[in-house]
Length: 305
Image (cartoon, rainbow, N blue to C red):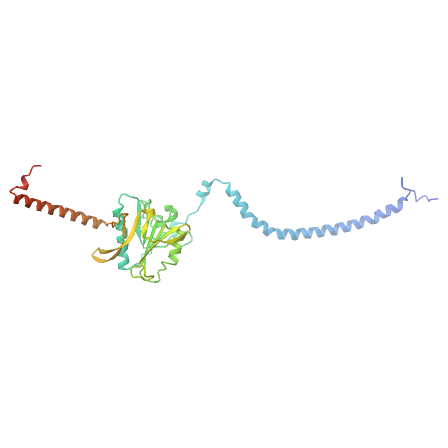
């Protein structure tokens, strides 16, 4: 017979007090285990979070790019910051060329302007070209750029030299005249003009400092220059050739432009001289004709109109 304190639980017949005692013992133990487990979880979470933070930072730039890609393109263009032209070196007033190179440069530039009168073209010698924001300018002996003009206010700092980002494109032609072996015409300058995407790069080496070939032309094909077999610049309908003759009182071999028919492009002075020669020849023919008429008894001054 059971004592009063050992009443059976409903439907089981098991005493109530032993079960309650077990529950009382189990609950503190459970709390301790849960506390330890929770503390361990917090530590692992903190470690995992600290390791994840750098990864989250590396993900942020692509997210920013994704957001920018949704912005209006015109707004992005307007936000581009161009270099402050007042900080650029557009001239340093340092004379570095020799007599021969200077005269050759004048010949190339002046003849082009005279022959292409009426066309929009910019041809210059020893003018700097800024092609990259972070790089100093490169100063070719001669460059030619079509369909661009120097602004009217050319004394303003930003208009004193060729800023590619202002003109919207690089020149089509660059010419370097070799006078020594330290000009890097076939190394550093070659790479720079190729990177600028100048259509034609010309190396004129009259004293054969770099090779036995005095005239070498390179055309940009794809991403790189390819040396040309013929000195004809198809994209701009111009050719180059050496020419024996006199320029500014100096008899020598000169680099000259020519057209598709192989005719040399004349300077303004040469054109004027050519016109004078034609006029003199016409006058001489008229004098000979007048003498023939007088020999026949005809007064050339009395001929009908």
